[in-house]
Length: 126
Image (cartoon, rainbow, N blue to C red; front, side, top):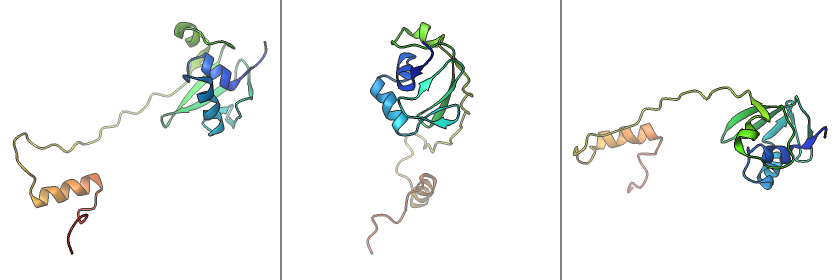
């Protein structure tokens, strides 16, 4: 066996829950092999680099072993080398109010609206 379909391989190494989900990801353009967009039927070989977009982040996998059938997680991890860069830690400020502080004043409400990107004039009578 020299090559396997990319959708079948992604399913076999447990990157997608179903093979049809892998096919849909290929159809949507979320899968690339050696930096080329691929169709579900594209063959993948040992040594190829697969980029698979999951939840807005790219997983970069180098194919070490070809699998046709879905296998257990420990065996699946041996079928690829994960080259994915770690996700950056993002610190988002969270607007909090002291417990028991009561309702926000008009000024505080407008500041909260500005922070969350809401229109403070929404729902006003004219």
